[in-house]
Length: 219
Figure 1: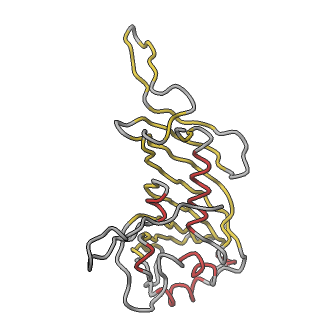
Figure 2: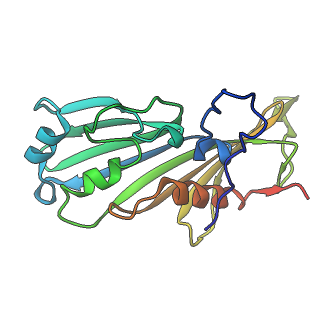
Figure 3: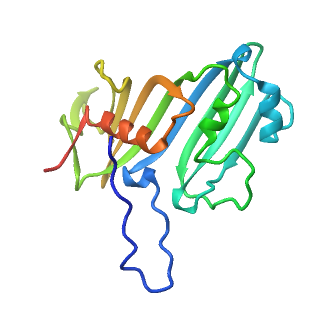
């Protein structure tokens, strides 16, 4: 699946460097959250904690900056260990300064890093992707906002949750709300993550496609 090209920096004043445009911004994506669980029997926890520089314990959290300045995004990395599973949360956001050393994990390769300790190539993930779609270019496929009468008063409903029909993207639910200038959209998905081939560009393009179940581009 293709995705938009980055904005050109040709018009910038001489000597001024363009701020990297992240893949999140290309799709008006606010953030993406992955929750992944791996059985302890299928994860080399001891090696992971050592390689990642995490003090041994049941919980950790940190920020992963990109290695490449052109990435334009960073990740929050959280986890905890219970008796049977390692529970991992990776969240992607726009912004972040590149690191100057070679200490993994990086924002761009955290999934591949995790995969090097997993004994299975994939793991099931629960995913939430949130978008702010400008009204100039997008519109709802159904009437929103709408008005209803409750307790003899008119109430405006400007947001609604959706149970989505079966689809190849494995999106199970959505949310759509109307702001002053944007549609606030979110999709929930349950699908496997393949660690070695993970590409956040392709992932966000796929999540963006899922929003077209209830949003459409303005011609």
